[in-house]
Structures are given as C-alpha cells and as structure tokens.
View (tube, one colour):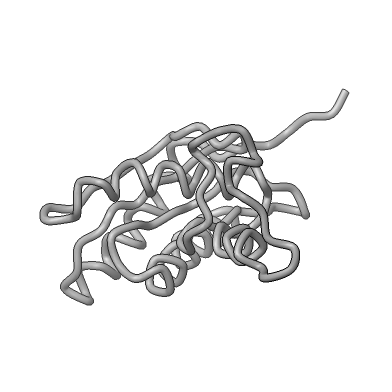
Length: 141
C-alpha cells in the first residue's frame, strides 16, 4: 500500500507566519492558504485590508497546486499556450486556477501539500508562496 505524507497544522502555521511577516515588512495585505497533499485547506489567513475575492482565489491556488503537483503559474501558461492551450474547464472543476501564486511543497520527491498567496501581482504572490514553502521545509530540518 502506498502511503502519502501530508502537511499538518504545525507546517501550515509555519508557512503562514513566514508570509505574514514578509507582507508586514513590505506593508502589503494578502491572503495565505495552505493545503494538504489532497489540496484540502488546513490553514488560511486574510490580513486586514486584503481583497475579499482573494480568500477563494488563494484557497483555489493551493488546491490546484497540490492536486496538479506543480505551480499554478505553469498550469496557466500551458492553458494559454498559443498552439497547445486548453480551456481551464477541461479539468472539470471550477476550483482549478492558472494564476501564479500557488506552489506545491515537495518532500523527498512527493507532494505533501501546497502554499498559495493571493491579493498582490501573480509574480509577488508566487514569490511569497515560495517563501512559505521554504519555511515549511526548513522546519522539517
């Protein structure tokens, strides 16, 4: 039987705290979401002043990154490819998104969850989500 490792509450808090600290340093607001290996939400923080739609978007970015085992930006780029692009509805679930800002967390080559950020540019969202993923991995030591 194959066992799948997954992030838990402690790891989610570690990622959220790292991103929250960086957002405070930059004096910006956003939403941070952390999902388990199946894409299900285990942690979410909406900072005061963050756009309300970013709550759903961050959760969907984390879900997508965990389910597809790759960054949401890459999925979006593939969907927008001029020759081989596809409609995001191809996936059959409206939670799939293709904006940057969702990154999977890999431990020993296995996706154990994802971190996502929403509320800023997709480049900044992706950068901050990456910081959250690094914080998780550093905590696993």
